[in-house]
Image (cartoon, rainbow, N blue to C red; front, side, top):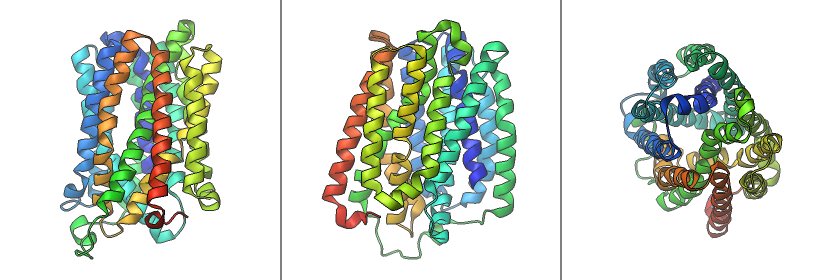
Length: 375
């Protein structure tokens, strides 16, 4: 599964690294960018929420074998847009593909984690961020110095390796057969809903950081536009490194302590970005944000899957659906803030969103400690 997560990171990293150039060549305003983000997020959540239904007819393996090649086509289209309409459509298409891959690779990883009885979710997600970091920087350089569409070359090898690995090693797990072994055991909907809301706030911060980082640095220092992906590179490098150690930290200190400390670091990084620092201070702040947000979502997603071992895809789909509302609304709100103020104001707003996530996670654990079985 590690190659699948790496392929996912290569697609996202290449795309967001090219966004400053794509936004400029397509004539996309901050308002349109925020709208594209909201619509793309809605599409992403819809596809993830449909995972339980899809898994009744197609195994994790089948879905991944189909969607991995499709993701390469979607990326190529996204890197060739030259109009606002095409830009928004590309967001919808790419978000749909990535949402489907995201759901099924996480569902499969959740099973692998339980079968091995070793915490590994953060390691998988750490791989995503490390590959994303490298591809974001390469994507920004290629898009400025050559053409954005050439960035697709960085994703070809990871995608090919992922496809071969899934084809050779992933078993066919049909949700209808696998997830109905205990038909009398209902999903813990209330607990999953609370986890979903907390995850929704955190994912909003992650996605916004990824999508707006290049634009912030390009606006801060236009002469350094070719390395505007450096903020995301540091974000991804620190997030990926943190996730590689995240599973050991979860085991040693417990999820609540780790997530609380991590979000406090992220809030500090967002606050620094909100006061319009220099290019290099902003890069360092992105490193802090990446470190702070890194382990929160994987921990919550792993928890959601473990709460319903007989219906993992359905549990993760429901969790993603509940957490979808902030993920749909906030990107458009951030676009409005950027249009009315500036890009730095976006990150000031994200400090408040991260603070809300922290308060919600603490409340969830306090009210549901007995059910959460904190490790």
